[in-house]
Length: 228
Image (cartoon, rainbow, N blue to C red; front, side):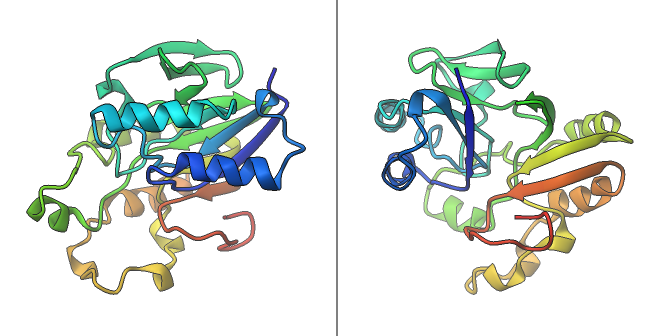
């Protein structure tokens, strides 16, 4: 039975390292009773080969229940072999679950609502890869469905309008909150697609929320009150 929830950001394939840190620094959280929510770019569904299986195998051994939000440097769970859609009692909603590693789970590939330990939660996956063209030139992985589609955005607008959420979990953030000091200096920002960030700023004004947590920018800090 899960009694505790911990939230962390991008791991980029080093999930086992992050879990080892949690186990060493927070021994009071029994893995069998703890869910770890990762806010995108987990790295499990990146290589699309045996390397992914190895990462999942190592992470699963720690015993934590992992709930993964989709980032930009990973494929959609719906495109990933070995996953199935299940109703998850802990989050009170449908998620994807690894058949071989049932303690590894993925929130929906599109915007979705959940109820976690009595708290209303909105999950907003996806983002644009600022290094997209570098990746393509070097034949690195890039996923064409990394951002939400227009149809998915429209659905989300109708879903959230006028509602209240205790928590919003997203990979990127509304453009008005972008931590510009964390932008990579080698990236020409004029080439970066801000579609999702602009859209998120638009819908953020259509619903109420208490806490908003996001990843993507690789920093551990409070951006503004109730936004981390």
